Image (cartoon, rainbow, N blue to C red):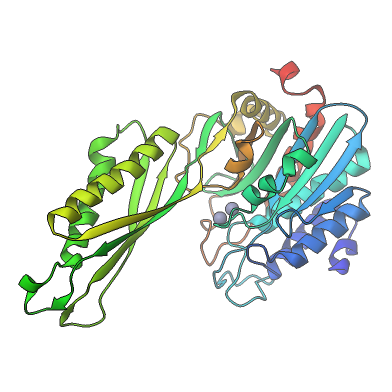
Length: 391
Ligand SMILES: [Zn+2]
Ligand SMILES: [Zn+2]
């Protein structure tokens, strides 16, 4: 690991080496020990004050240069439980684990930005470099916040990048309002009366009831919510029964809900239970709903999104900055941080050829490292007057 950090002094080649090193050694949620060590070592070598231990493997580097506003720049460090099929030379060496979302690239870009800013010190104020664990599913960002991230490291605004396949390399997309949807998961448990498959009249069949429930749930989004309020309710699992000739006593129906507004989110949740009780009640089957709120929608605050847009325009030219686009129905843990501190989540074009995120053949596009790093640097150096004076 130390070899990677000393291999070359060329900052771009160095970022690429760090990115590929992390890619070859992916780590799942809250197990990012090697990655966390690498980040801490790189920041320490750059003369940046390092704090460790928030959400287990979280790292926060702090760089001060006199009085001034405080900006937080965040990267995620975790990988996914996917067997890599990219065929890259720096392919994952950990069986069944890979960086399929580019968090290796995000980490490398933020290290690159931290090193450059520590060397140039051409900013006024304080920069917190926030490296979070467990973005995928396990809420590492939420845990960092709960463990005092923004009490220990007060920020006036926070920013994060995510590489975006399908958006041409060299383009940047950011807008005020929603960028990503909320992500909740749910499990219905239907309890009927099991029995002989040949004598259905002696049972209360949870299988046919579950089939009706799946269809009835589809009318919540399609019939009860305005088409102007995007929402998705998807059933992803149905479990029940063990053999051909027995009607089971229990069925489980599971899935996910995605949307952009808190109101719609609350409405869907309440309506799901109402519909389920009505459908199951009609067939003498009892039902319970375990609804787990995951990530809220990722909402950029107007002033900070506007600031990020102007910084991006300065870097790549306004003609290469997208705004007013459709938000993604995927979700993002940075949303929890944005509930605490104003800020913006920014998409960095990963190129049209790059495989989709979470695909087994995905690999972060190293040609975008420099643009991402420079965007982070510019967000920090231009921030010295704060957001207000620049809007
Ligand atoms: Zn992901
Ligand atoms: Zn991601």
